[in-house]
Image (cartoon, rainbow, N blue to C red; front, side):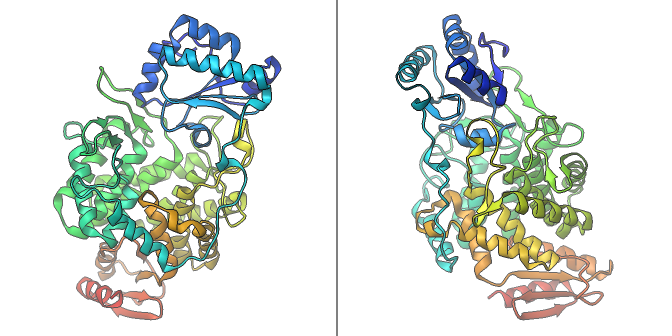
Length: 529
C-alpha cells in the first residue's frame, strides 16, 4: 500500500494480470511519477478515500506504475499526462482512461467501467490504433521534408511570446536546434522566452513547461532528461551566437544537476515541485537520461573548455559502461527487474558514445556505442524501422510500437557512428528508419522537427573535420573544429588520414587541408556555401 492511500497496490507484471484473470476482474492502472504533483494530490484526495479504496480493492486489481521506471508502459497507456488513470481487461486492452480524478469523478468512472465489464467482459477493452501492428507509411527521403518542417517553424510560431504553439508551452529543445540552422531569429526568440519563463533563477535548472501562452505559470517539476536537452540546446545557441547569457543558463543548469541530482555515480531522474515544503527528489539513475546528460555536458565543454561539465560527463559515462551496459545490452536502471533493450536507452547511449569519441577522443566509448548499436539493430530493427523494445511482456507490451522520436534519435546517432567508424551499414539502417516514416512527411509538425534534421543529413554530404593525431598544433585545431557553428558536423580526432599538425575539412568530394584554427573556420565557410 502506497503511503497516504488505502488502495492495495500491486506491481506491474505478469502476476498482477494473472490475478485479474483468475478473479475475473478488470485492472486499474495508475500511471504516476515521483515528480508529478497531481499524482500525490490524487493519492491524498482520491485513493485515500475509504469507500473508493474499498471499491477498487474489492472489484479491481489495482496496479501502480512508475512511468520513469516503465517507459514502455507509459507510452502504451498514457492518456495525455500524469496521473493517467486507466482501466483495462486482464489481457491489457483498454476499457476507459482519464487523467486526474477527484473522488466524485472516480466514483463515476468506476460505475461506468463496471457496467461495461458486466456487459462485455473480456470484450470490453480495445487496442489503441497505434498498437494495431500496421507499419508506418514509408516513402522517399528528399529535401522536401526539411523544407516542409522549416516552413512549419514559421506557421506555428508565436511571434508575440516566442516558441511554437498555443498552450501549454513546451520548450521543444530539438526544435530549437533545428531552427538554429534554418530560422535563427525564431530560435533565439524562443531560447530567450524559455530562459525567462522556465529557468529557476533562484535554484537553477529548467521547469518542465508553462501553462500560459506567455510562458507564465510553469509546472515546477524538473526532469533530468528535459534539463539535459536544454543544456545542449542552450550550448548550441551560445556556439551560434556567442551570447554569454546562453552559456550562463547552460552552466548554471549543469551546476543544478550536479548539486541536486548527482547520486554519487550518475544523475538521478527528477525533482518534484517545491510548492509545499521540501521537493521530492528521485535519485534513481536511468540509462537514457544519463546518456543524454553525457551528450549535453560534452557539447557544453567542447564550446567552453569548462572542466566541471567534462568531468561529470566522464564519470557518468564510466557508470554507463560499467553498470548499465553488458555486451551491448543496456539496462534501463540498475534494479534487478529493470527492462532492457529499450530503444530510447540504446539510441541515447550510442549518441553519448559518438559524442565522447568526438570531444574526448575516447576510443572505448566509440566501441561501446558500436556494440550497443549492433545489439539494438539485431533485436529491435524490423520492417524498416525500430520498435521501442522487445515484443513481449504484460498487458500491451507484446504489441509493437514504432516511436518516431526514438527512431530519429537512433538514426541521427547511427549517421555519426557511420562516419566515425567508416562502416556504411549504420548509414543504411539510419536511411531505412527515416524512410519508414517519410510517407507522412506532409503531416509532421514542429514537435518532430528533429526528423527534418536527420532527413536533411541523409540528403546532403556531411561536413566532416578530420584532425591529425599529434597533440601539438592539432589540439588547437581540434578545439576549433568542435566550435564550428554547425551542430550537425562530425569531428574525427586523431584521424590517420590527416598529416601531423593539420586538419582535413571535407564536404562530399571537396576537401581542403588547413594548419591553423583561423584557416579552418574560413575553409568551412567556403566549403559549405
